[in-house]
Length: 172
Image (tube, rainbow, N blue to C red; front, top):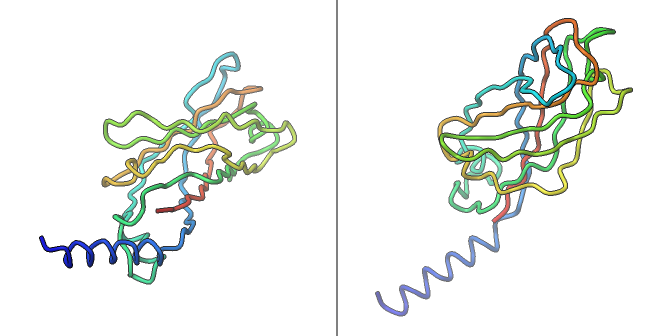
């Protein structure tokens, strides 16, 4: 390769890096929390798999200028949980804390939390994630798996539908 070609490739990458603006994008999914009677240990509360096209999300948020290769770091910035069909005896206040585990394929899970739930939070709660690992490799395949883990403060009396919302930050 000539020096001019190397300079051009290097200059193009620097230009791409300079033009890329970090952004955030939501992912929302539902899980069914079964009746929970165990209040002494942490248990799995529900899980789901989500199809996520990383390249399409990045193209949609950058005016179709960049693809997945421009992003080097993806971090979960915020997690929200809402009990859609709770009642007086089965709601978010039944849980003392929750965690969110993210996996894809054979990757080791990235576990975020625990996030403490106030006893007064009956329908929903939102949590800022202060320190999150880079989860890009978990969104590079066809599906990403999410699992809610937690500990019950008091037993529940019925299964509940939980809507989980996350905000993912995308950076170079």
